[in-house]
Image (cartoon, rainbow over all chains, first blue to last red; front, side, top):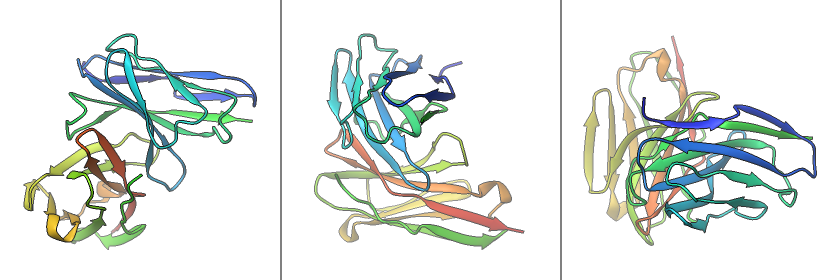
Length: 113
Length: 109
C-alpha cells in the first residue's frame, strides 16, 4: 500500500539529547514537509523539501535539522538547542510543492523530560 | 508567517448543517484547503478551492471568496463520526501551506 510511515509513534528522551524522527514515503512524491502540532493548536511548518538534496526552513526551524538524501526519506533531528521539544510531529508529502493535497503520516509524539 | 482565523469550537446536533469559517491574508495567496483531524490522528484532506465558488464533495462542501479573503467548510447531515478538528490551510507563493489553529466540532445526539 502507498503511504507515509513515521516511526516510532511515541518517543521519550531526556533533556539535552538529540533525537531523530523517521519519515518515509512510497508515493513517489517530490515534496516533503515536517510540521509541529501543540495541544489545541494548528500545524506549524518546521522544514520542507521540494526536491532531493534541497530543503528550506519553515517558520520554526530553530533547534531542528533535516536531510533529504533520498526521495523517499526526510528525517528530522530535534537537537538539544530546541527549547521546548515536547510536541506531536507530523510528516507530510505532496506530488509537488504546489500540489494542493498533502498526505500525512500517523505522527510521532515526542516527550522530553 | 501568514495567519488564518477560524473559530475555536462549534457544537451542533446530528443531522444538522454546520459552517466553519476561515479568513486569510491575501498577499501571495493561491488557494485554500480543508483538513479533518480526529483526536490523536493525522490530518486528512477534504477539499481545495483555488477559484471563487462552491465545491461539493458528498456531505461536505467548501466555498471561497477571494475578494473577501474568506472561505468556509459546510458539513451537512452531521453524523457523530464528524466530531473532529477541522483546519483551513492556505497555499502561499505556490510552495507553502499555512494552517489555521483548527475548529473543534462537537456533534451531539
